[in-house]
Image: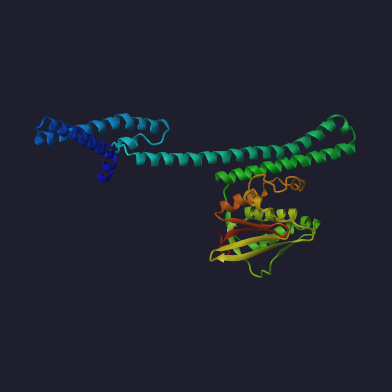
Length: 352
């Protein structure tokens, strides 16, 4: 408290002392000129002058400066009004400067955050609009063509209805993925955790994607033989979606006659890390930080021709994080990419 008082009243003390010294010297000089020195009276006057000056200056500073400073605080909501009533009144400019700097820094961070969010919102709305617009216009085009008379031809009618149906399926696919991400973000999607063999799960995904990989002559394989089961605790269905999305991406952007390799390694005592590695075209370094954003595409033209909702990697990230795990990516152009994520390991196949 003593330090706080010294800081608070430093200005009043110094100013009072200077006024007292100047006034006392003036009185002494006047007495010398008159040839009469009254030391006791002069000392008493100096003391009274100091006390009065200190009181007047302190009160005036508090009323004129502090109250206006408090109004500034209230106007910009810098501090709660209770913080003034609960503390002694001070006029410490250092404290004021620190508070204003803290306020300015906080507002700068808030403004920067809002700018980033606004840019993300703008990109997201633009991407959603683009992704939905393409299949909608496709469906509309086929339906309008049929209404204009094409449906009289049975072969054309059947062909156009099938194509319109594919457009509708793509719309449903996008909406379902968006709904899944939203539920994951707000924590509404309940994870049905269980213990299961992750090696068996990966092999099942290999079997499901075998034909898709064969079309590009890409080999799906493990990095080694896994004679023993490796049990993990997670939502089996969601983790199958994670592995499937990563493998589909690998096939989609992999080099023809290439290889996609999956490995399962012990990380720490109760963790394993699963790596999905390919020798495809790789990802430019500047795109990696945004790779898991909704609808973000490295190749705006080529990737759309490959189909998909543009939400696969975003879903992967949200599912992994919903399990309390981490996902990583490493890539080099012309060499390939590696996506890896951690999972909780279980030593026995028992229900959680």
